[in-house]
Amino acid sequence: MSIQVQKTVFNFVTTILLMVGYLFYVFGSQGAVNLSKVLDFQFWGIFILKLTVLMVVAKIILFILFAIFKKVKNRNMDEEDLEFTDERDKLIEMKSDRYSHWIAMFGFMVSMIPVSMGYSVQYMFITILIFGFVSALMSDVWKIYFYKKGI
Amino acid sequence: MSKDHIQNKIRTLRFFKDEMTQKQLAGEVGVTRQTVAAIESGKYSPSLELAFRISNVFKVTLDEVFTYDSSKDKFKKK
Image (cartoon, rainbow over all chains, first blue to last red):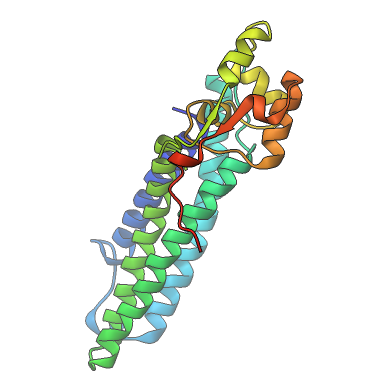
């Protein structure tokens, strides 16, 4: 497995783990969320902002740990540079990001359906979050696909 | 997504250049070894700039490295 695919798989797994961990933290056994909070705009605003900060900070820390782990593991080997990207990597990244943005945009449009039908605001935010999460995962899936099958 | 209409002789040229490795060629042209492997197997068509760099490493012209078969190229004409 090339270093690019390893990085993508690592990103895929950490995205799932962080999302599940955060949802468990908010809604799980320790979470103090009741129905009135879920219907509140402020709750969802804080939820998304906290999630964004958590994802950014946790991803930076996890990728530093990943880089250290790779460095220690391949100490005596002529390893590949983790940060190095060439034209093929950039093309694959652009293509997979473009596809994932389509999913995110589609999700935004779908999230307007419950709003237009008069449902409460929680359905809109849940739809946006689900499609945002799926688009993030699909970006990695497409990257792995393009690395394996060619572009 | 193999590109049948664009073929290359990189493997042969590497062989005649003292069994040059994919990693050595990748280092010479500034890409990863995986990109060289993808070009060799026809899974990726390099940019014109990279194609010139590759031909420059082997000291041959571009058409001696890459060949194009228009009969196999499926593209829409305007």
